[in-house]
Image (cartoon, rainbow, N blue to C red):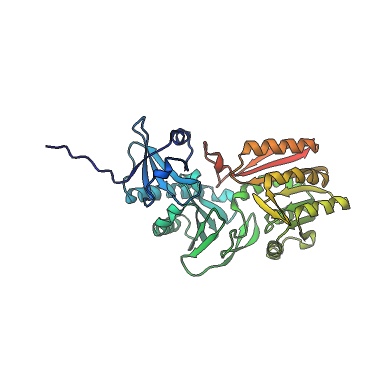
Length: 405
């Protein structure tokens, strides 16, 4: 009698040796190569084979992504072999992620924090942010779209258990093209007010890519508390909706300037100031102009600042010029130095996974040294936004504190 061959429930695929090598070091992405072109496009869940061992890789397939064709869920010899098995694993991981935040929420001192930070929490391609009573579910991989109803059910259940104040749930599907789709799952919701470190912020959930505050920057703001307390004059470049500006006012700064090319963002910033009567609005000035023009104007006036914050978009159009943020520092660093007071400090950021921290640090150190400055401290995401060892792309938000030599 012929022996029955056990049928695999999920399709098996071959993986490039380099993918297997990086996976063993903790990298959770399977990027496009000759092997991924053979993946069955219509299958959401795959099992990657290691020809040199019994270990297998459970893959979340994303054929529509330009670069990341799959994300690694688990490596082992005994893996889920069905969507239901995967969802049980997802449910367990998400609860673990929520419980981390339950135990730390008092330390955060804010209404806005991540309940799930994608790859760092073992849930690649999916982020969940809490904004007061709202859970914003952000999909970075189309894979998760096919499990949207399951995500909603599981997130609602864990919020009911651990964050009962959350009663609104919104999906945000984010594309590499920067296109965004918001989907309200409950009653229509477009605007709320939240607090971060005792400061009120107006948020909008509509057509915008950004909603009004970056929670991955929150812990860094707190880490810079001493620098803000010691600064009476603060310049916030690429100010967006003004979180650093309002933080400066709350720490006692009496001369705060915010610069952004967007009239909409400056209007939003000024609305945020209005939401905080405890802050002295007369100590703040807005400028709707390019950062380079503003810095040149301040230098011509002889204006000096104790602290300058510079957080450019990863690829910006500042007036008529378009350039990468790192390249823009070639001009910006010497201009920033010319506007610093004798004991002044500057904080410069880069927000992209395309340029790794080492390259950013080396370039900024070179530019700072030429301008008579040095790196005093490195800044990275913390608290609810931890980074994953072996996954440098996850360390996308990089900062350096500069001081005079």
